[in-house]
Length: 478
Image (cartoon, rainbow, N blue to C red; front, top):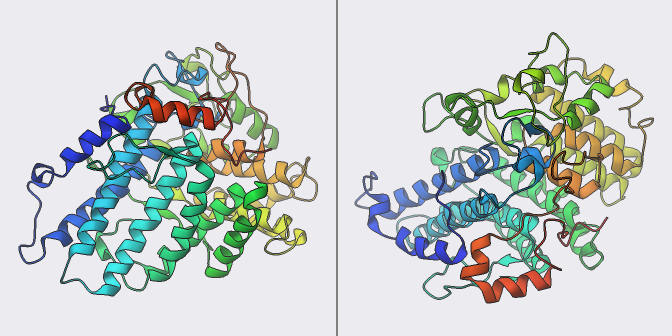
């Protein structure tokens, strides 16, 4: 089980991370030792971020259940939204702060201190670091609300950091992205970069696509409307993803410790803890969605799919299982993809921020097509003609149409599927069978924060309207 460390305890751990022991055995270049360590830390942070967002270990990541794509069999606490018994909120908080943001911050310090590195390479590396850092910070804000920001990553000065206003943090993150993207001028970390291998154009597209996402997140917040629209427009004009080749993806290997964490969680460990939830199965059955054969196993018979009642104690043998591709050792993982970006472009067009509502259908179709292509699913043309799918005839407002298909396309990316539901308030989710609790709209703060950083915790809890699972993040205004 992963070590659980929260902000105050994390800071003590972070201080210890600066010892030489952490880097013992690295192949340091005696003429340029910081370069090796910066690359090592950048890759360590990258892998930690991908692993955290991809894992399905119930001690670590339950986003597939919050999205009601999966549900549980024997142990059903998490599907019933008990997120504190296993310290799940602790695990996410600790992983992002300690193993992602702190390592990225240290990689930047080492890069800055390298006297032999060119200024162009320094700027590019720091821009790559900054884009991943903004991604991680945005995730923390979107998950918890107000979080420690200005006083974090400096444990020698701030042992018990204050929580900053979530909306203010988000605005600052957009400023940071705007500053970082133009600095991508050479290959930066080069082949040591396991996401894009130093491809400058790809990194710019990732940065702009992230900016587009963040603009869409906050566009309904009245006080951020202008900032959001500017972010959306400049992201699109700067160049966002245009195909699945642009996806922010990391490849996994066939040997541990570099295998896909879902394989580790389910196959290597021999677990039968999950079946597909009836929420998504019923929805896709109604659409006769061809992706079912690729998302799901056909363990109940050819083209037969039945989801387990969400939150119930489900028999593993009685319901549809996870598809084989999802549990492969080498299945890549993505932080962001072309399908997601396409739906945001459809949203922006409907708002007449970039393009016109008449253009939204093309972006919507591109999002669905990108998902079909990614999963190697045939017959997308026929699916797009389905009256329940076709943009002109599908039921509901444009937000319903976009939200439903974004939620479906984010299968195996539980966090974004859950966030699609939070953003568009669709589709309708099932009530958790045992607890009958509503779907969380945020993670509560780690329990240990209440004990170790109590003054700042209490202030933050009051500021957001209460540290409850149903308290909405500032951008969740619909």
